[in-house]
Structure formats: C-alpha cells, structure tokens
Length: 161
Image (tube, rainbow, N blue to C red; front, side, top):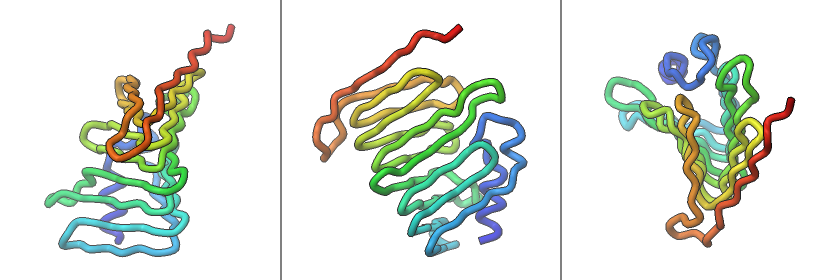
C-alpha cells in the first residue's frame, strides 16, 4: 500500500504546484490491493485527498501500469465527486456523476450519468461531461451508452465586477 501511495504522490494530478508535493490521504471502509494486477479497490465512503484535489465515492479503483504509475482512477457511487483548484487565484472546479474516471496521462476527467461540472461561474449538466484539467476545456453530451438520455444544460454567468 505504501508503494501505491508513493506512486500517487508522484502524479501531476493537480494543477497547483504545491499539490504534487502534498501527502495523499485515503480513507475507506475496505481496501483490496492486488500488486500483480496493479489494482487497488477501496470501498465504503472513500475519500482521497492530496493538496487541493479531493475525490470521493462509494467505490474507487486505482489502476497502475507495469511501471507502477497510476493510469486511471475510477470512482463510482450515487454521487461520486471530484474537486480541484486550477490555480491559486481561481475558484475550485467541482464535478459529480454516478461514475468519475480520471485519466492520469491525459489529465482528463470523465463525469458519467447525471454528470455535473461547476467551472468558475458556469455550470454544465448532462449524461456525459468531459473536462481537461490543463486546457480547462469542457465537452458535454446528452447520451451515455446504456443510460437514459440526459439533455445537456449549460448555465453561463457573466463575470462579476
């Protein structure tokens, strides 16, 4: 488990420089770790925090490649949640969905099924919302395979002076 946490600590999961050096704290009711398969599965009110990043869900699976690097983190639950502060002077970006997939190499987050993303003053809802951490771009669509259609809605607010 210590190796898994050290690998997570080395990831550029957050945009804030100080986040990469912050310790990772994981709490859950249960952990099933399989070093050979490169998986760690946390269940029961899972909360992962590192610096400004927080990821929560009822079940979180962390997948590593042969080099031990985290490639994907998948959180599921009635309302899985992720948040991260892009820069010290910017508001926290928050996302929800029944499934959240973080692709480490691409620094891309997928919010799936009842997806919702709050970025600055704007809100995006739909069946599927994709967010790129570095470019801060959003893509949304209404349909998700195997799920009821959830129309895309956007609320765009003007900047406050």
